Length: 286
Ligand code: SIN
View 1 (cartoon, rainbow, N blue to C red):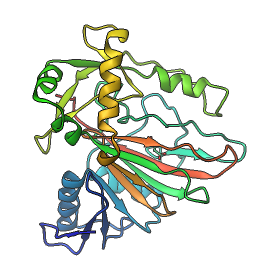
View 2: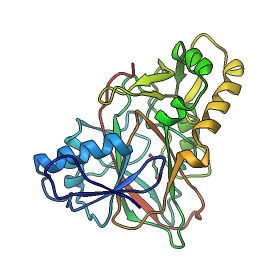
View 3: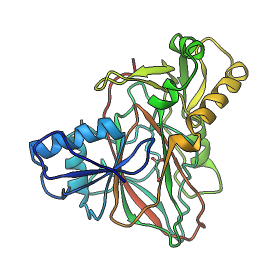
């Protein structure tokens, strides 16, 4: 594993987790306020690696919210698909417990892309993990997915929009296979560019996903499906993926503007997996 020297004056170490994306950051305690130099180094590393791992963090909900807020206003889930903590309403609890079968997220997706202004980034803190290496999360690099397409297909996609909606998420919560609350709220579908320019790095990333993208603009679902399936398969080729094996205390942040993720459901309904998730607001995709 290579160690990448951070650019700013700070004591953090950044170590690549894989060739496609992901890096582990050490030398910072996220329960304490993060100084300006360390924050700048974390931001640099985030833009370079897209997914950052911080091991052995035991974040209070308030500290998780405070760290997330450094990147932008903390947002609740627009559809209230999970319970939020009473003491910190910006913290969503993704939990699978005996007596509570959690809603599955085993679809490649970018968080809340069905919103008009989807979140820039999400932060997940592992509070409890199933035994035996189960419940991994996979991430893929959507800059690389776009860059590795042929010039001809890139030109086609540059001219397309895509329509995103939450119907699979709503169906998931209503399914008898889990104990999440039915979702009463509804949002109109959102139309975003199929390729977006990251507002901070200026790089172009494919912006469609398997959970929320319904079709391309001005096309039917049937017409769109083959191209969407090709793009999801292309983006999630093993060489473009980092698979994270969770440990209790891990904090992972990912950039929703240039990655997708997939939460493996390979554990049983009575196994314990508890994650605290926060999201920081983003910009309208362009
Ligand atoms: C998510 O899809 O936002 C959560 C991922 C996970 O639970 O691993």
